Length: 193
Image (cartoon, rainbow, N blue to C red; front, side, top):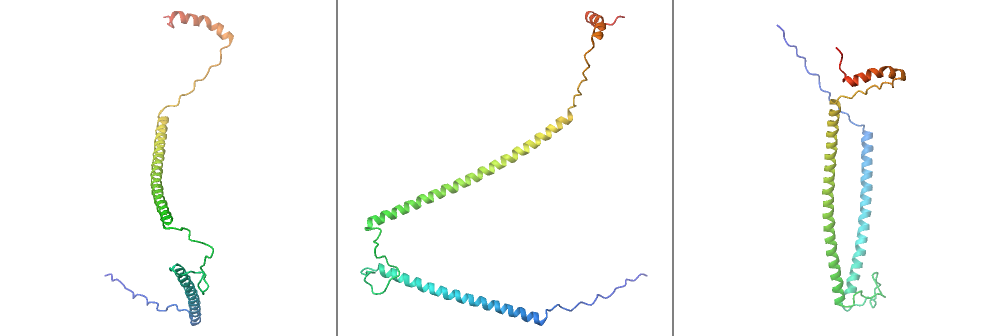
């Protein structure tokens, strides 16, 4: 009787690789330093954004104060950052302002129409390019089929063997054969029998 011998599986390797405590401490210190630098950079950026927001709010308040009815920016006691002392309003009356807005709206409509036309042109050009590409592929395939057919025809057609040209007979040969050639032409090539 044959019995199957089974061996116990090898014991699992329970040792795990762990970095040394010095390396672990060094990597933690690097991470802390990097996080601290990132945090400092974010605080500086936040402070910069707060200052920028404050300047924008002051500028907006000056612009709104300059537009308020009855206020003259030239007579205010606080200095203005946004001040145009020598300029005047570009549109003196309401009709010219309305005409300018009308021109702007018309220009926008024309721009949108041109954008639609350009989009349609691009779509049609893409379609044409696809058609040309497809036609080129068809032509290449047709040329390949034609080349295959020509190769088959040339393989099936026997190649004509060129005839050997005989050298021109000499004068003596012509003279001695002349009576026989004449008899052959008169009697039509019949053999005497």
